[in-house]
Image (cartoon, rainbow, N blue to C red; front, top):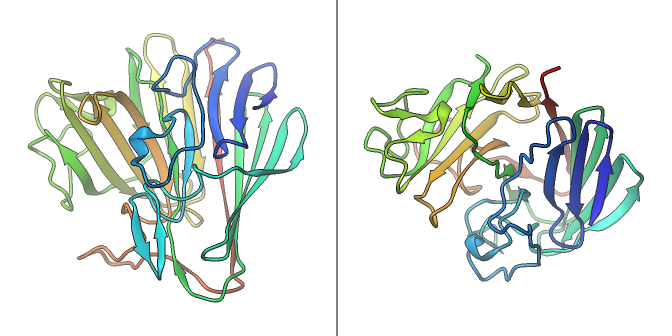
Length: 297
């Protein structure tokens, strides 16, 4: 494990175990923002033949080049992609910065991520290079699982209008592939407050279209603290939102997932106006995300 720290924030990542970020802790308030299915935040390299639910399920993973298990352009990819089951190489590291790389030899792709902490901000920079010989359809999705605490609510900037529903269980007002009303698609359901009444067996995955410089925030009305995720929509044109209230393996958490394509796999979505992105031999692509923690004075 590698720890990055400032007086305001502590970040722990595990290069040898899928490059996961297993802790995002506010040193001002003591709040741990990242969810874990085990109290000890246990990590290991999962079996790629097994579903993601049997992985460590802690903190932040990087989903690439897919979310759902699929076969694309002759390549077979695991559930939630091929990065969380591989050891990553440390290229550079100090007390506030670490640069990692992981190789996907099958399609000939390399994936780099740099973490940097400054004050109460975690900055993430990415670069993907295609060293292979075949065109590769792909998507990337930031995959943070956040704790859902009393008083939390989600606030989205106006540059994140609703796009369509992904997967859903137990919420009659939401239908896969259809538009949705945000944040209250039906009486008794408030997605921004994490409420899928009666919160006993539902989940929902929704997609938003991004423009400009969107900001997605979790704000706690009881403590006054918040977390902002921001990015450039020219680099990352969509965001996924995941909320489970016992509907997926009995878990309760939520996620804000900036992504390059509003789907679970890099295959064309019927009725959608844009194809999935593609990497051509020799291509390089990069993008950036900022996470800022705020605590009341």
